[in-house]
Image (cartoon, rainbow, N blue to C red):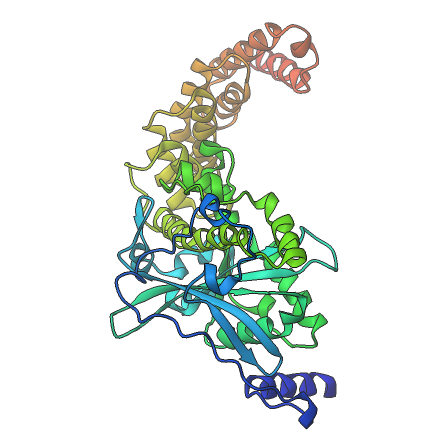
Length: 444
């Protein structure tokens, strides 16, 4: 307990730039003055192309390549910081940044099981994404931490992407201190795969630097999980870059860099001091941050306001997720909407099965009959709907002849499968049901 109190005290002292001993005092190096906020700053940062950056062989420093960025001094050293400022009306792909503020984080509460999300506005959250020296391991560093947040200004509300960058590994304490200061102003986090990667990584780096942090304990909306639940059936890949093209209507410029290349570009910078290729990494991280805003808006809209104009596969995915969570009324509504759309046959059957099962569990098996009949009439490789119909007519409707009819249709279909039909695990159950029904009908 004493150690915890000491750690918290040291963190507060660092925030106040209070250090022990005169030998640790540094002359402050202020942030390089940024240009005043004007229309140019309200447009996204567009780095110079790689070809123009390599016209000469001189080493290019960050400050020259990224105007407006500069060093921020702390009691723990210096850190390079760069801000990008966006107007809320900025169009990112098919969406505006302002769209997210039409929704509330509480929309996600039933899906991510965190009641605290309902207590805050999206303005209270910090978007966060890291660029690292590797994928895992104790030696992995976050050499760039990108954060995004909404803030008020004299020009009106805006969205700021701030990037903290390590010129070398010795800048890490300063980076963490500056990040901690910003975190103190926000309630929660929004990330893309941050719960599994970014947050544990940063938590470990705070620990290595003997700095307390509550990152893991904050309200946290990780967009990867809802993205997979909502769009994997239709889009396949739910990597952020894939979602940009297939969902958000965004095409990155040639200034981007593939994620797998980023660690080697940073290592090259550490060896040479030349920051030219790092401009592409700053761009990559910047676009990741802004895309999280529009993706969060898409997730929030579909979770809170689905309608018939949504893609039927997305409605099926949403209804299935709601059914899994026990949200029966919402699930039924969206599964019925999906059934009215143009679903692929396999998903059409899965959708009807889900809806019929939902009705059956809620004591409405009679309403599920036409759904099972529709499945049975349009499938040749599954007899689960036939079995449900046989069960219903035998045990609930008491119509044994109908129960026998569906049982025999199921057995005929299984027999047509050849070897697969001979190995079908429920074939014996179907044969027993047929025998029992024939006996009951014979007994009158």
